[in-house]
Image 1: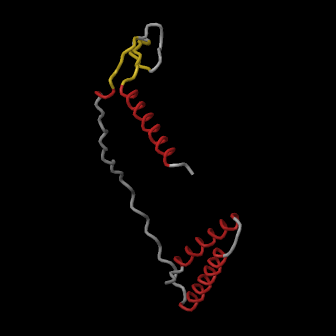
Image 2: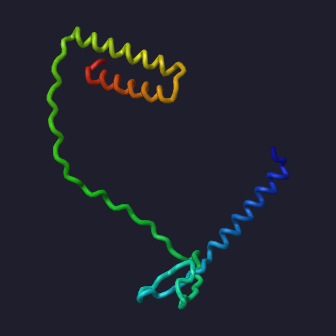
Image 3: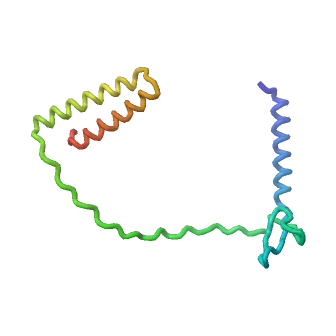
Length: 139
């Protein structure tokens, strides 16, 4: 543990460094060169005829780009689904009970100890069972 005096010294040091960096960032050396007739700006000399220009970054205006509206995309209508074949009520009840029991067993295994590899298999099985429950229209 650091003592109070050490923490105060560290926080003072950090604040001093931060303020020094902030002051240094306000002015930056920018070199201007012409390469193939095109004005080029760099933080390093970019050729024999580089001109050093000091820019005061505190006076530079920064414009925020305004968000453009999202282009509207015409999407084709979704294909109509064919109604699922009606399942006999007793068969559906049996299927739902079997799926629910399997899901309970997976949840029980997830609550007990297992390896990372087995967890992945259990989570995949859980997702598959939940999907099958939805498809079978189990309430």
